[in-house]
Image (tube, rainbow, N blue to C red; front, side):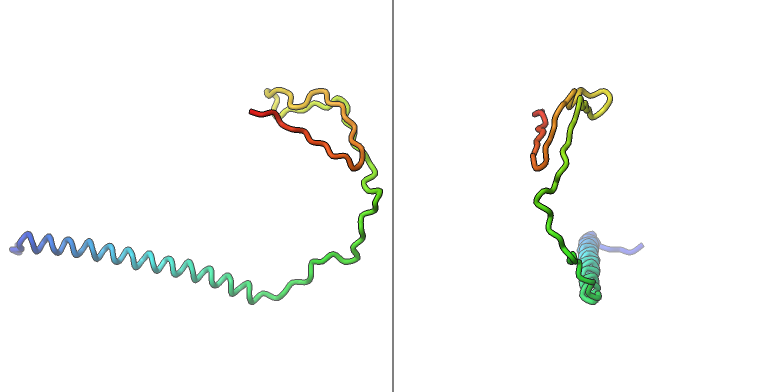
Length: 109
């Protein structure tokens, strides 16, 4: 058996913990560099891509002033979110003309 004073053993143990912390820090930095390099590689890939054909609409036609021309009619419309929930809409009768805007607010909870 080796005759080693407790002070030397404590010092070796303290240095080994310090060394492990340094190794963990180096590994973490290495992983961070690898992640950053992956991001840089993606940027380089996008830079090297061939430009795509223009996505502009050709032969654009403006919407005619009479559009839309139809309306919406609901007769006795009932709606609920599930078969056990109360009716959200019940026997709704409404006629919506072209260019009208309708808002259906929800109840406060």
